[in-house]
Image (cartoon, rainbow, N blue to C red):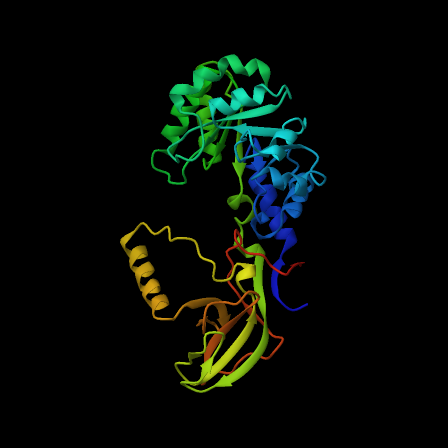
Length: 352
């Protein structure tokens, strides 16, 4: 099969999963979106068979159907429940589903349904995404008798600075409102353990905790995978010759390589830059200037170097320029391609 291929060293990948799980008490693997490039069903199966956890988390209510018959344990829906979400409301009555609630009004509406839901209450953090304001947490106490309270979820920012202090502060505030397990995201396992001990108090047992992991679990060992794309066609071109959908003139003599992988695979689909340092910003400015001039570096490596797109990627293939002095790959040959697996969709996964 030609196309975009992810080659997986399955033994190495599974060893990484087991290593992370062994170092992460209370691990809750996250299987959401595109399944981190592997697909939701594969991740759910690995969570049960390789890692052996009792709970996984999905992003939305729609994703539950992908994993429900593959994973036999509990399933957390991370997107907060809203009264107008019919599917999430239906799933709230499933004894294996744990529903996230992030507003007091929504908790009141959910309790009115008399579905005896299992509920995680989300605390608003400095992320400013979802959650109940810390000074409003005590308002939920009278409502807890109408649900099966699974604990507090605290979704922290990824930056190290101030993160532990925020976790400790919000955890303490939540426990003062109601006792229950603390579920964390983006906090190192050792920090989770330290917060649990600190909030447990002198001579008391540590507070029960869970830690959700996604990217670091599934993609934490880059050496366990490689990705390649098939060369579909090769054409010699002259400087000034027009080519591609947009008929742009080619800037030098060379070759146009038609390579598998386009926008439907996530090729060329970039998120806004997270650059924070001066150097990172300078690189972003330089890259942006080239793109504005019609030049964008592709993720394909040919003869040991990244190559320029001739034009933006098509839906299922890309046109890439190779200088005339170089020998082009043959049609059918595989070339390395760098994929952002949180947004990529590959044509096939091959296990080694």
